Image 1 (cartoon, rainbow over the protein chains, first blue to last red):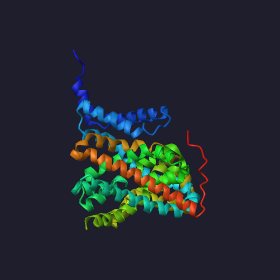
Image 2: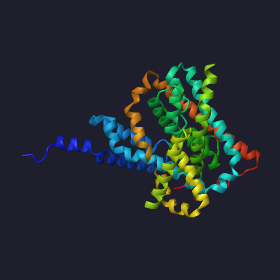
Image 3: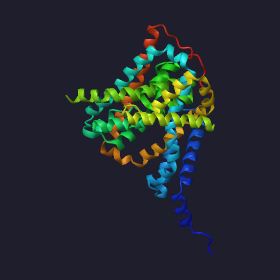
Image 4: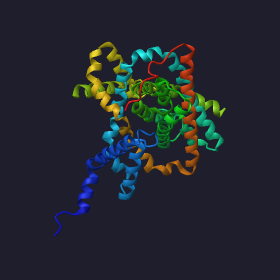
Length: 241
Length: 125
């Protein structure tokens, strides 16, 4: 005499956003806790931990990604307001930003061009071509812009989204060891560079380490979205002719 | 908190409308960010209202990338046979962009005698 059927409960939970929304927050909390316990070791990236946990859970339960996203979309939606909220650290650090305008513009142009050209160059050397090659051009910009640029260039939007996320995670993981290796102690420079090279995920890492770095990362991300949209088509055309 | 969220959403809404309406190459939320910055500069009270909520959201910015990250894990097959090569490209190119960007920033700041007042500050615990 069973009061309820387990499959019934499962099908209810899969219809409602509750389960996967909760799972997303819980997985992030686990990732964040692990990251804190590891003393914010860059290898223990909260996004990486959470996505591996949830990816495993989806695989084990045979849940398709769209079902998961029904619940997770509320978290995903907050990316928009969070981008707007980056204005607040910009405002709070406005004096510092104003005084560093010239280094910022120079680092933006050099970082942005390096990100695009090196990706296309190395990919070409490794024999990647066609739509996959084109999808690499905007990989350092924030996802919505990157997808728009990829479509315009003739790349693959879904692949671009994946490349963008992976770039962000790689940037967030390597930035701290790389900067230590180079003995760079200027938080403004570290933050700005990671915002340009690794968009929002890099910016999230910067905020973990230092508030000033976070503010400069936010502006690097915003400016690079604009610059890549303007120069990526031109750089790609230089490669092709 | 509600006034703060409303201000953020209004800025995003105006940004999205402008970006789409004028077919600008910038995403709506980035325009919204510029708009909110302009708003804060014009009316400092806006910054006070939004500050606590904005800091709360930004402290957990990583969380917001989790759904998209799970999408990548679930669709690893779209990387196709070139997966390992693509990984090498991303790793090398991101490292190069980081090094080029940070050296340019530090170099130009040094050339114009612009010193960082944050260089000595401690990392946040």
